[in-house]
Image (cartoon, rainbow, N blue to C red; front, side, top):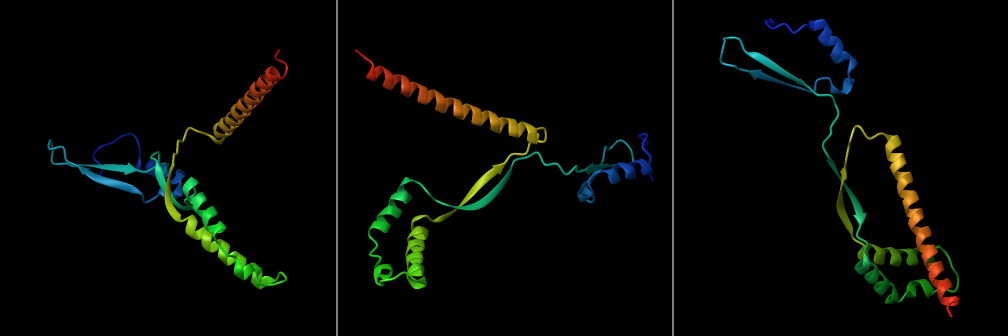
Length: 164
């Protein structure tokens, strides 16, 4: 029995919940509120809206590629004998498979798999139009810097060629 009236009837509350996303139905918290002033206790109902504004972490697998692992890969390739590949006089499937096995063995040993975390930043107010505009702006700035570098190198070369 409801002793506190807020202007909403139970039918209005059902309509509000029904119009929301159906995946959030059943996702709620109900807490008793004991104020100590009367013998009636209130109940606090917290409904979730389904929008999570916190940063979420996503883990994915990638290969560890840096200067050291590339140098290790080149070292191992240069010290491989490649005898199974060069034993035959003609190319067929077995020679290709032996080449591929040797190459992949070296590749997998030089570039190990690592777990990486990426933060997924979810801002509800950033639309796809804003994201696209930011991407175009970054491209324009990158092209401007490249053009500026080319122009400066041209001026430098021009001054070297035509200097007295």
